[in-house]
Image (tube, rainbow, N blue to C red; front, side):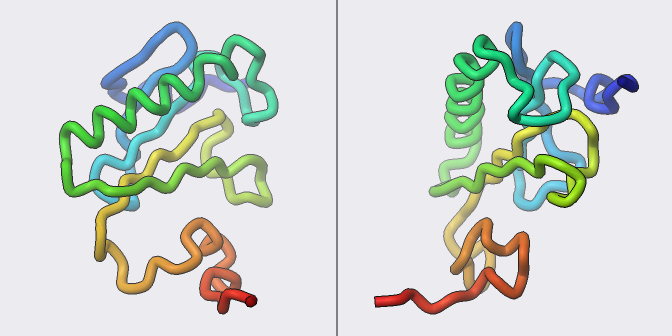
Length: 125
């Protein structure tokens, strides 16, 4: 397995299992990546200790964002897991994308936008 490009970027927080850095191509300001210290490819390769520590670390990063920018009212959390999901770096990373009211014209569909034709939909009764 080759060395991960993520190891060369500036980390602003870390623990034994994960580190956090700002996305180089942010979707919104403060877009953060949560990256395992261990070089693994897939979310499904996390071991039990990493699983146990992932969500507390993710929540810590959410809290940091909320402290830094009170205009943030929501988040998208995403993982592109596998080539067909258009993962651009072969090292697991979790996107924590802060959202603010009005940051896009019509946010309906949220993460469904990864397939643009599926993003907008009419709710069934």
